[in-house]
Image (cartoon, rainbow, N blue to C red; front, side):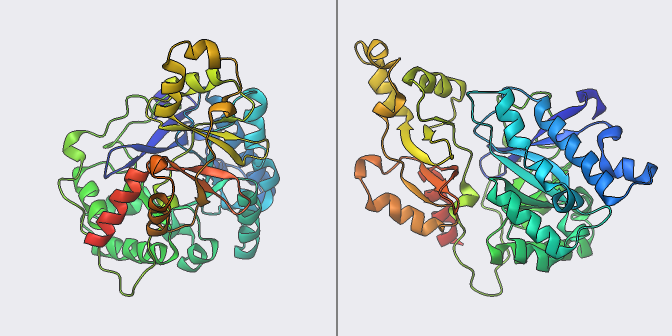
Length: 389
């Protein structure tokens, strides 16, 4: 992996449709990895956390031209969340200062097990603070460093099974038992589970047998030098031929949240001209919409790709609209809380304006800040699959 340079970007893929759903920043050099430093230096918790937070900021600033349609996953230690979370909170601001005029991509902090000290109460406090600052929260390696009780308490957006556990799934029943326990708790809490380090067809089959829909690893997509999802295609022979078998839950569980199907919105500030929207849609051909945001990150306008392109492609369209504010062409966002379940979200789509039934839904956090969008086709697919199961 050192061939990639200091940092690389590994795609996280949806195993059902092959789409990228995230990019994780990898630390390719041993000198940037906190575990390596901790083994070779006598450092206390604060020194370790300051080092880790500094490398996290450097890893984010390493990339340019981030794909705004998928979240950027940044690795940090649990020690760092407890001791240096204010510095971690500067990640978005640092990128925004460098790339003025472009909202930073959504960021999800992948919290790794503590190397020194991270008491559960202090970790929960740090997670709450970072979540309030607009970061998504993931737990990386729960079976190794976090108890099932902590998963239920923190209710992260994503839990990742560590690569060592995934490697043992095809041939070690105990590894499968551990994975099933994590998955069952996550399913009850409404947390998405992903697998890391998938390197063989046997591992991929074992992951699918457990009902895990997101994964990353060398079998699926190699790390890349640039933070772009362009050209990422899951090979046809790795796509499922039939719906993966999902173990029946021991007790009824609530419908999955719509946030599990969400993807990052292509977003712009609500004072940009229409030409900026046209350029953003050209830069992100897979996106179906652009969301306009106020300075607090709350959605104020929604531009559907088809309607917007129709407006500016008509006679004199570019001349009429290019320099006018994009909000003049925008509709009100169709917004819902991110934790709304799939069935309720689908009912919301069908109950509204029929002409906008297939507009992307804008997802909001508890403060009304945009956390992403979800496609109606994905809601329909999930609702149909859930009913069939």
